[in-house]
Length: 590
Image (tube, rainbow, N blue to C red; front, side):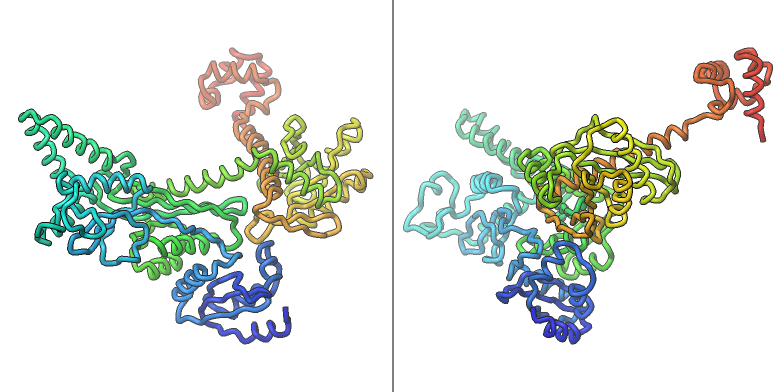
């Protein structure tokens, strides 16, 4: 990298919107981005601290290029097109090359019903769908060909084929057919696929009954099979809004633990036709990644009205609406709002599943354990994590979680009530001291390492205590370092050296599980103490009143209010006089 050249180039970037393309030593585009202000955005890559992904990207940049646009929206469109063209390795590639099947009615003199996946090759044709898979499309195509005798052959033969004799083709190859007949059939076919099946069902039912009355049972069976096929194809097994003819798409996302999950529902005629889902490590802004996904999706699919969460910013909604040239709404109530909530819930479940699956893979756990030991420079078979929880310095608690060979050892968990207020550093010192002073005293099982949830400050606090106990040489201390989005992306040792943790590595998933577990234990204990304090009664503070007398008083008087309204004599009729006097005085103190 020619730093002097890049510095000069960065200084002269225009303060205008556009797209920028980062290039490596081979002059290949490795990242494409867009900016409202090219000068400010591109310069950010070369100043300040970054997360693991950005640091790695910058280390490979040898040069960059840019294209100025008139607006940020134009820059967004250009970014999508360039990503599609170059497939840069540092851009999250949400979209694959698959697409849904459609039923295509060709725009020919004698039209045909075909199955197609690419709607751009023949824009004059009429398309119906999309269908969830090829099987559903073929089933529907077969039914339509039985109902409407469109041409079957690719090239017109010299004479009619078997389909003509079966009544499934009008035979334009040999007989003259009015093109208007095909136009009428096309309209009927479109009406059928849009859910208007009543007329067809009534006609087939009448024909079936007439054939049965005429003892033409084979023909009646054919009509019956067609009716069964219609009910099978048009069954509303996923009906969200019965009777609706609305077609729209719903998209939402969920982020956690450094990953983003995006889910989309395709709704046709009120029915959820299918689901789109993508899961990927999150390296940038979640809203921008979501926007990129939706726009990439519509590169290969017809534009529909789109529903997005209310949390999406106005600028993002405006950009999406401008690029797609269609309505983008943020429903606040009703069934569309419920669909968005379903999308978000699906995204969350899929993201959680990703981490659960990795947790259950023994090979991944062993790989993570080996990598952690490698970074620590010693075996890290038994690892301890600490976390504290409090509200404004009250109910301050700490949890101690132990992992053996990458798995939680719950019998070794410990909980602590702390006395050091709301200082995280002081809390760390107290819990580490109490834990290891006790282990030394009882000759307990010392860990191979301690992982503190924080950077250098927390490492220093733990190290100070271990030094005082002469344990620093026996226990390795490492800190979990987080990026700008509060996601763990590196480990730090007592020398201040950091080790980047890729978000697709087994170690990243293991550390995330450890953090979640120690945080869960601390929060649960904190909530338990707080809840217990909130349910304490004034009677608990009265001398001479224990659990049995408290229960007896409340049972006798029915409620705390009735007890307060009772006289001292009435209370003394239930419990001894001295205790009754103490209760009465406590209840009537100003």
